[in-house]
Image (cartoon, rainbow, N blue to C red; front, side):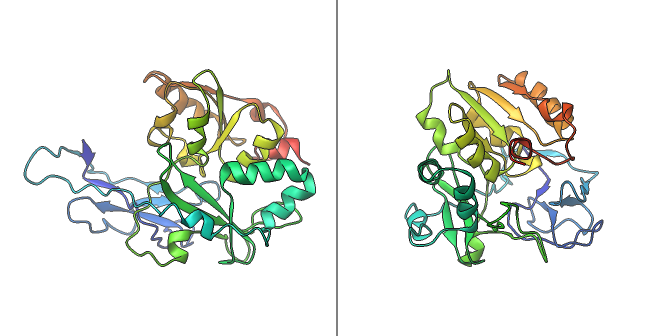
Length: 285
């Protein structure tokens, strides 16, 4: 079963009707493939804006008749692409920052495990590959960091893009998965998986607490059943950002009724830190 309208799965963005930033994902009509209108959709600036308006007349469609819904299937990158964006002669800004906090051996291990890449889309930017549990490469998220602070570069604009944009793959269908998902093939059902929002934080936590497998949703809205499905049957601890606990807790309770084993930590809610902070802000001052 699918729905008449859904959020556009392509990377195209429009001006948000609420914050006027070009971060707005529109709803599309899944039969005509046309955009619905200029106000139904979701802003990607979840913390700063949070605009999300759903179509009022959405309804389920079954694909059992002759007018079957044409479902978009994900596009996968060729496996060789990881090597194309791996440069041992140059360090990304994020890796430079990691080396200022951790020893070389620990950083190298994290680079190898998570297949961290580098691109000069922005000089010294990091590529976080989204590789699913079937070892298929669903996307390469590009982000730029300050090499001294480890913080994302958000001025004069938010430095986030994708490898398929860099390569101008216009018909690329991006269907994301959890960052680090490929690593579940190396653990058993008795091991613990920890979920955090930020890819950067997943890397750092994997160095701080290597006994757990650290994965990242990439966004607050990434904590959802379609992304978490491969983790069904595993023991999962979710660590939402400060002020996001209730949202993730509600979703965890719903998913646990469907066979998941998710414990949602309230650790950050009980600590006096800024809204939007995560475990890294607690551990590294």
